[in-house]
Image 1 (cartoon, rainbow, N blue to C red):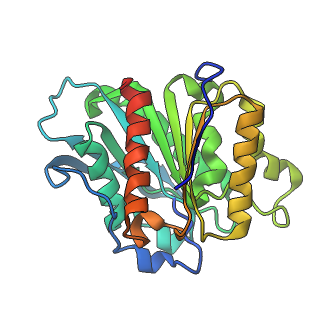
Image 2 (image 1 turned 45 degrees about the vertical axis):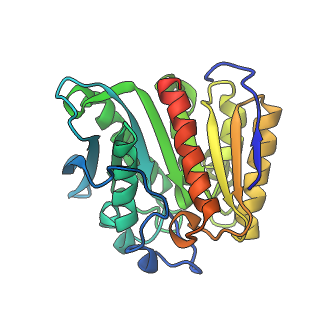
Length: 286
C-alpha cells in the first residue's frame, strides 16, 4: 500500500457503484474491518431531516454505548454516492452502511448515515448536493439533542458523491475538520453537463478555488478501479500539492471499486484502520 502525506503548510483551511460491481450485489455486503463493541452501540433510526418532493429523507444516528444525554461528541457523516432513485431509496439500511455507523460509534464518535436523492444521471446535481447540505445543517442545528459537537465534523464521501466534496470546503471548513473520499468520482462527465456545471462539481477545481479553506483530506484509491476515476484521483493529489494542502493518500494496488466491502484482505483492513486514525487525529487531536 502506497502512502503519501503532504505536511500541513496552511491552517485548516457514496457510493455510485460501477456496473462492474453492482449496487444490488453490494446491499448485503459487510465491511471487511471491525473493531470491538460494534454490536454494542445505540442507534436512533429514521430521523426525518427534510422532506423532498413530498417524501421524507431519513437519517440514522449511531452513538457509543452509554453516551449521556449531555455529551458532545465529534461526528462522522457518511455520504453515500450516486445511483438510480430506486437503488438509493433505502440506501442507509444497507448492511455495510449500518456497519460504518457502528464502526464510528464503537470508535468513540457519533456516526451518521442518511438517504439522499439521486442526481439522475447528473441532471439533478443541485438536488443531491442540497440534500447533503441540509443533512449537515440538520446535524448542526440539532447537535445538542444528538449528543454531537457541531464544530467537530468529518465528512466521508464514497464514489459518486465525490463531486460534492466542496460541501466541506470554504466557509464550512470552520466546522468540517477533515474530509475522507473512498474511490471517488471527482468530476462529472463534460459531455452531459455544461462547462460551468462541470467546474462547479469538479472536486479538483473546487480545491483550487477554496484553498486554503480546505480541511485535511484522506483519499483512498482502488488500483483495479476504472482508469478514468484513478486519473482524476492523481490529478487531485497534484492539485493538493500545488495548493499546499494536507492530503493523506492510501492505495490498494489490487483493490476493486468498493474494496472495503469486496476485498477481504489485510490491505483493505489497513486502509480502514489508517482512515480511522486519520479522523481521530483531526477530530480529537490524538
